[in-house]
Amino acid sequence: MSKLLTDLIEALRCLPGVGGKSAQRMAFHLLERDRERGLRLSQVLGQAMRDIGNCSRCRNFSETPVCTLCASSSRDRQVLCVVESPTELAAIEQATGYRGQYFVLLGRLSPLDGLGPQELGLDLLADRLAEGEIEEMIIATNPTVEGEATAHYLAQLARAAGVRPTRLAHGVPLGGELEYVDRGTLAHAFGSRQALD
Amino acid sequence: MSKLLTDLIEALRCLPGVGGKSAQRMAFHLLERDRERGLRLSQVLGQAMRDIGNCSRCRNFSETPVCTLCASSSRDRQVLCVVESPTELAAIEQATGYRGQYFVLLGRLSPLDGLGPQELGLDLLADRLAEGEIEEMIIATNPTVEGEATAHYLAQLARAAGVRPTRLAHGVPLGGELEYVDRGTLAHAFGSRQALD
Image (cartoon, rainbow over all chains, first blue to last red; front, side, top):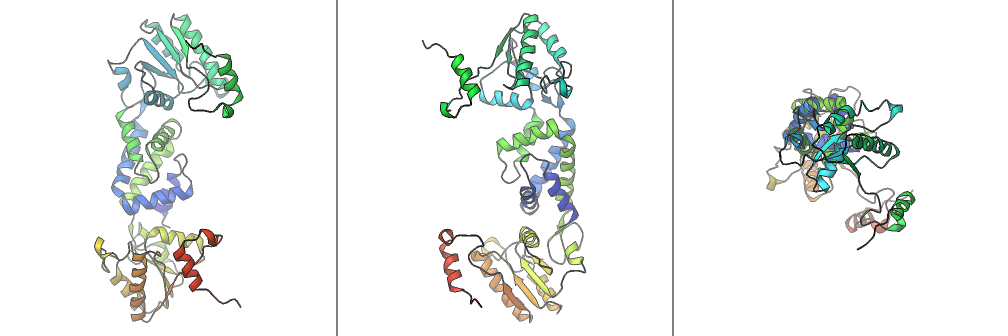
């Protein structure tokens, strides 16, 4: 196999979930049938890797200093949702009808990994809360040990600024069967049972 | 989501087996964790799409006028294996200990799609056979209707040049269970049963 083709197959393996076999299939597919879109991918990918930075206001991915979401006048400025990463922001945008703004931590509190309040941009977040516009801060960190610790810290930050902190509800997933729900979740859901009216 | 990010996700969908969800996961993965390899993929991909052409001797993918396989002095020049596409060449190289040379048709005879002897480079193949070095031509086209028609045509070409044509054996796949082998294959395997000595 030619050097360049071997290099291409190797390079494609940087994609998550793509092993040697799929990488080879992708390389041959593009070469045999889709060079134009392959070239386009090469261009867009290079541009994205170079030009996509972080919004100076919410830290989400953005190629402009302030992202479209922060710049939008149609988003509710009284609610702020804090997430760990852009992936989670995208998931919330796609699944919910949330119309407020976001703040992306780009991580979670993890002193052992060198991730403290500064790395998570919490000074930026504090400034944002101090602006006085925000009334509710929805804490949407992941329900992991570190995510919960981060949520706890964030809640204190919100209260200090006179902002009401809220947290995503935990419980049995919709469509899930109790039998297959893990113990921790089931215990939590049981303890947090809600009155039906 | 930013324009460039949306473009990247859309562009990644040119890869076979990658839908919207995987494309998004790939884009976020590269942006969050692997920009360097993302940039490298962009470069190699662009270079491959632009520079990989076809070997003037065997028509396999190559960024040089004559591919390494054709240029190699360690390959047997008396056997030529004819395949439909570079993918199949790669499969044979990886699975077998074949040490001869190749010829890639880049298609199969299919007059309705405008693929005739000329498009498959059969004049080039005829020249090759006329050189007189080749003794056996292994016809490894796919066992489809069009592949079989192509094989038939190729066999005539070989015989006309005094070259012995051979064809890959058809039959029950190794490790396959007779119960699950399709009828056509089973009938063929039954009819072509071989003596045990």
